[in-house]
Picture (tube, rainbow, N blue to C red):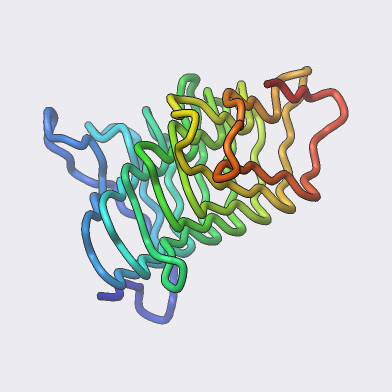
Length: 212
């Protein structure tokens, strides 16, 4: 299933979300094959939704391209157990989150996401974390993204068993954290051969911090 706009023109959508539904997201995508969505702006101002797009379960070939989330209250995008495969990963590309309040996460990956690519996206604070990876994740790559003006640019956190598989790559990203805020906060200690974190050719402004 492919959803795009006529002549590839961007469309702004202000969703109606019923209070109390779970997950509290404008758009929920779960357990689909080959789903593609492009050229959509989701404005959450004045809605009951706290998240723009929630993705869950196995979704090989899922692509979200040029999707913007404005004014989220919880997170722009949330991937929960989202999984593609090596040939058909879950892809978030050329997308944006613009927050206007504290406590917001731009993008959250939680509960063992697998085979996910985040490419060419922009996450603009204020907020808590630009990108948050909570718990184990495997075959996950972030490339050519820009994160700015959150309390923490990239947070790797959550429970990770000593022998649990973990492989995350950050390459060619720009993380701008003015005022000495933290660009990368790494909350794991990797002791097993199946666990790896790769940081390559990322730009971080000189007064930002990297902590572990």
